[in-house]
Amino acid sequence: MPKYRFAIVVGASSGIGREIARQLAQSGCRVAAVARRYDRLEELRQSFPDFIIPAEHSVTDYDAIPALFQDLTGKLGGLDLIVYASGAMPKVEENEFDFQKDRQMIEVNDLGAVAWLDQAAERFQNTKHGTIVGIGSVAGDRGRLKQPVYNASKAFLHTYLEALRNRLSRHGVKVVTVKPGPVQTEMTAGLDLPKAITAESAAAIILKKSARGGEHYLSPIHAVIFFIIRNIPSWIFRRLNV
Ligand SMILES: NC(=O)c1ccc[n+]([C@@H]2O[C@H](COP(=O)([O-])OP(=O)(O)OC[C@H]3O[C@@H](n4cnc5c(N)ncnc54)[C@H](OP(=O)(O)O)[C@@H]3O)[C@@H](O)[C@H]2O)c1
Image 1 (cartoon, protein in one colour):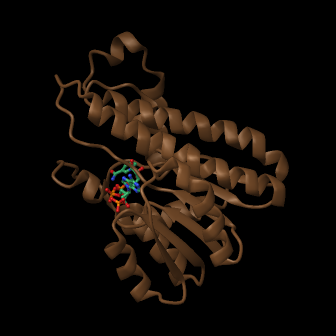
Image 2 (cartoon, helix red, strand yellow; image 1 turned 90 degrees about the vertical axis):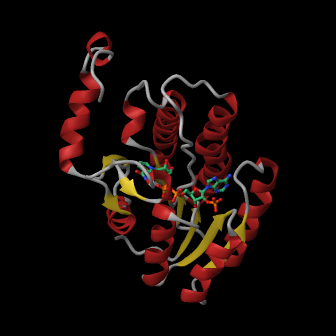
């Protein structure tokens, strides 16, 4: 992975975000670890007392984000990297339309991402340096019958990050979209995902890929499979259960 000195990881209390924070701290990077479950962040701090700064926060508390961002960059002493890993994917039945679940996904996966990453984008635009990583998903490549709003929330994130990349690359800033396939985390606990990789290996691949701006799948085989899936005409895709 590239050498980072100061990072913010939003969604660092479990799964992929926690592993990213842990691997960064292990490499000697100071990490502000942000999430709602403070006990989880405190556990992480106890493993790396000199490197983890825990911050209890819900990404839906949008108005608190500018001050918290300033506070954390001050405590860290700088910022090279921000990773937005917070995400929500409640269980949605195939015949269910539940606005509260849909709203939660849009608020956490999209509005929280914009509120945090706008802060980092502005800072990096001025300092002419920095890396922004957003965790999208292969699920954002198509609209599927099982998870309409989760799919749409990830598609939004991909497009927002592409636009940030187009704005910021001329200022020397990297914007990296990663699109994992199935990963074993709390989000997918209980789902039958035989090909899921561990959060540890997903995090290691994501940090390695953060060296290069652009959109990345986590494996070359996914790049091929999802190229095909993206290009299946809608009227055929509708008949497939993929
Ligand atoms: N697992 C997969 O198969 C998979 C595949 C593709 C993409 N992804 C994406 O990867 C990212 C990480 O997910 P994961 O699989 O590691 O799941 P996870 O273990 O459930 O982690 C989700 C993280 O999001 C945080 N979060 C949720 N709501 C929040 C809120 N209101 N405020 C602040 N943080 C919040 C959680 O922290 P608190 O609850 O402590 O706040 C937790 O740290 C998500 O964006 C997910 O969509 C996952």
